Image: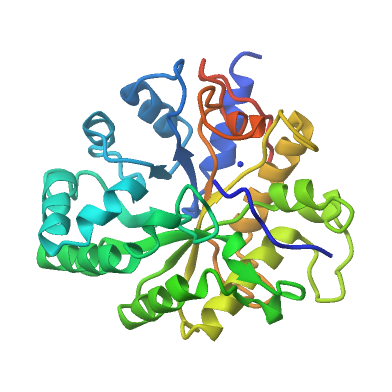
Amino acid sequence: MALLHPFSCKSSMAPILLLIVLFHIAGVQSIGVCYGRNGDNLPDATTTINLYKSNGIRGLRLYEPDTNVFEALRGTNIDVILYVPNPSLQDLTDPAGARDWVQRNIVPYYPAVNFKYIAVGNEVYAKNSDTNQYVNYVLPALTNVHNALSDAGYNGRIKASTATFSAVLADTVPPSNSVFNADAAGVMNPVVGFLAQNNLPLLANIYPYFSHRDDPNNVPLPFALFTEPNQNSAGYRNLFDALLDSMYFAVQKAGGPNIPIIVSESGWPSDGGLAATTQNANTYYSNLISHVNGNSGTPMKPGTSIETFLFAMFDENVKRGDEVERHFGLFSPDKSPKYQLNFN
């Protein structure tokens, strides 16, 4: 999850029924939920996947290969983003290592498990001390995983990509000025070229919450929560669209004008920091889902659907980082929904 986001200007039956309304809208397949598992009190894989199914959640992002989760996903038709963890990237710079990874983690399960995207690395950034050691591995690993998927017969059906975040951008106000910053361009420009050449999407983690938290004077809460009634000078009513278009403009300038962007994480915490309340989280998730399902697109990409994965399924009580990181769940660990979300 990104912590650096440059921009200034995740009866007793009633909650369950509301969540079914939330996620199971006829014809809508653009909303998924990330399955983070950094908790010591979370339901097992089978129980969790049953919770996805019972609430009509049609997409899942998984942060590491896991046989128990794969077995629980068999036959569910849930779209899956499977993440290659950053510490595994170096092994996949060897083509044989990438082929072995695909043979172990994809071939035994697909198509019973509906892998849609493979995220080769997450938020790898030269200025981040936790990920800077991986910057030289992203493109070789991505190339080799793409080739291994093709060799296994999955070309076009399972798409390799990498997940990035807003911290790699500069000059985001207005979004049309956005470019990859000097610390990111060396990685992102070649990645964009590879994605464009192979008709692959880019995954991006978009968090208006952190932009507001880190600069509340210049990023008003209504703008971050989709509740600002007026457009700003650049024509934006919400920060989510502004951040997403900032990524689109940077990708375009790096040589990828037709690359689709999948929002692989977005969420709002319910506790642990400035503006992290249950009310604000409920407002954000509700308005984001309505916005995405409305297929209105963004000012740069009007009418373009925004495939989005909400962060996250559960509160995760042992997750590293700021306190807010442990409060992004749509559900509590006891499986009870945290929000009353309504699309009427």
